[in-house]
Amino acid sequence: MVKRSMPQSSDFSLQDLYAALDQQREARGLSWPQVMEEMQKMHQGPRRISTSRRRLSQSTVTGIRFRRAAEGDGVLVMLRWLNRTPESFVPGHHKSNDIGARLPDIPAGKVLRFDARKLHAAVDARRIERKMTWTEVAKEIGFGPTSLPRLSKGKRVVFPGVMRIFRWLDRPAADFTRASDI
Image (cartoon, rainbow, N blue to C red; front, side, top):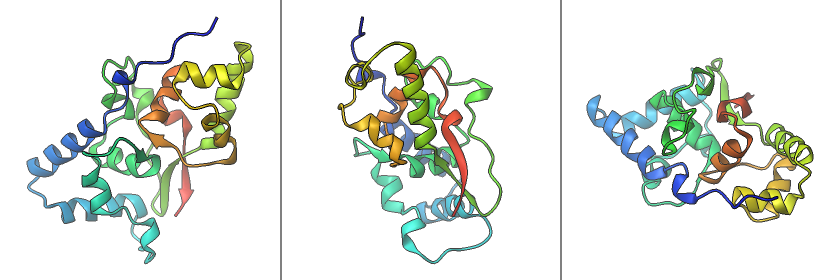
């Protein structure tokens, strides 16, 4: 028997993430450029990379208050700056304060990324265990049928949707992160 899809009202809130970033910025007396400098140091460590494609932009961060979706690796940088779990931005999530949900520290010169292939393997294992088709899994999670198989190719994940996958697996987002070269 296939359950109904998860209610999207219980999704990760990009607007709440923005509010928390802005509140922390104001509490520390920082400008947005200063926040971006701190995030950049956390994101890339002491060495600098001159390519703009690796740099998280101020407009990306401040723009999340208006967006319906945001790229997962960028959201991880924001969450690390706040020292918050992804689950803490999902209303009523039972793992929001679990120590196991904390994002890992990473060495200088590395960046925290989602491991989409590991996530795909976990979804596939649960799918097989529950004797479900990919279409049934996607419907239960609240995704389009082609979205989940793309994870096997290591494609980037997107908030808030990725949090529905973690809830379906009943595992914290931190379980599916990895330190990667910049």
